[in-house]
Length: 364
Image (cartoon, rainbow, N blue to C red):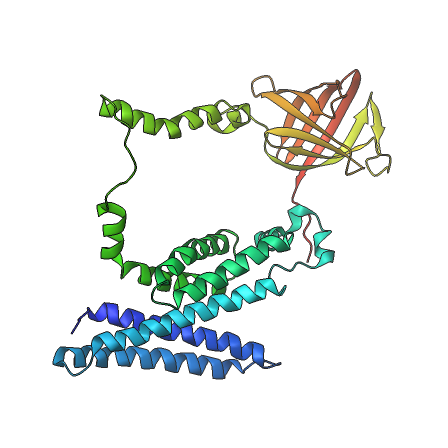
């Protein structure tokens, strides 16, 4: 009779109850128009968790006495866990296919990009390609089905591990609600369980099996290892030569990054009302590794590279878009808290711009 530790048996028992319980909650809420009362769902899940915990203890005691077939019992819980994982992922897969995920209201899509939360950005991005959503949905369903058969279980595991890991990373870094993130972690733990119980077989396959590929012989093993290392070092050197990295790698002095609203504007000592609707008036300035001047027309922008000398407080910006703009910005910069003042020339014109750093607009 095969014996496992109490922790291993309890893990598969409790995890199976969690996954099956969550599946029940999802299906019940979708089958009933008004959903199932939260108290009913909470009690059901609690009963399943408590029962599985108690059974794990009983199982352990009976196993020590030799009065239970642990292999058969474990097989049942492994089967329940596989079924629960497959049920959860198939439900999520079909939701994707039938337009129940990654839906962003059309009205919201017209809001400024900067007003979107991380979650809104994620859903809007994925929602732009239904073909891609179809691929992800079918991969989830196929991997889930393969998980249910003994001969294809490992294939299903290898398909679902990257899928679930990607979901976890997206949910975490794009601040998805804690519920979906927790579920993804639980499902990932279940899939990893089925990977780890095959440890001996996988170790023999990946590390002990005979290599059929011919090897390239070098007189120096050190040179061979350096050649391997070059695939990391050479691209890194190429990337570090990119001048856009200067502010981050070489600590080039920069102006405070951000979005600035034009408070006051004067050209050739003549004050200009920035509320005027003429498209020749600068209304916003964006500063990061480049500098961008935006006019009343959203499509009318100047993009340029700039150099700032913190000693002389001088800025010089050369516009690289549009291609026909040859006038250079040269100005003295004055910093006052969250304000910047540019006082200098733009081409042949004298210019003074007072800027106030502002946050992006927020929309419901």
